[in-house]
Length: 337
Image (cartoon, rainbow, N blue to C red; front, side, top):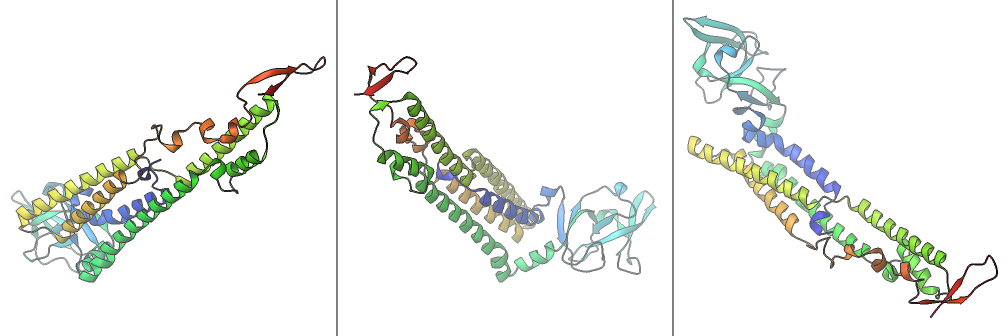
């Protein structure tokens, strides 16, 4: 089994947890991941308890005719930061739909009425506390603590697991006379080495010895498979494909922001750089290490039971000849040359 196929289940779980933590930030940078058109960090508590400061709201563009009382909308009031309040009344004058809004924590409605062109969209998803983390990431120390350090720990964890699996595989490749004395294969080999070949060949004893040795070898291989919890090369290839899609999508968002907003958002560049590093690391795991093919005769694991188990053929002589015939009812016996 090659090194790239010996990624333990622990590393897969750690990777999934990290992806689960990273995904909300990726969605904030690319709202289309959750079916939204824009995302904003809430700065004030006017919508408590439904939406608190530090939450992130995802907004989807919605026709004015589809917005009703009770919907939470994000709209532009002419300031630098949009406002997110709840619709308390829908007003229609001369075919123009307008909305009266109010914050859940405010005692009075908003002073002005919201016209249709100023509506950005309806809030479709809220992620608590995400905005507080994003605000911290904007600082130098926050970026190191919340982005660089976790990713470095992930890389170290996967590298440690790969090295440990490779060392364990090298130790388990030792079988027969070279196996450790405490292992099943080593004990069988030691017992066989100390026992001289019998002068009388007994096919029953030979078959019993063969199957005992084969069972010991199968047990060692089962222990190896259980301890490895391997991920196949196909799984690694699928992970690389997902990483490529994430890189392409983040790059497209960065390009769109550059052409539309004249500069990409910092979160988008963080997702893009993290996806590139992750893709490079997955490619390294996929194509590094022992590239031996399990179907290749040179692969140590491709050997047959007879080749890998000296004790399996210890009782089989090169040639046999009839020695004597016992009394009535006795079986024939053979003597080895």
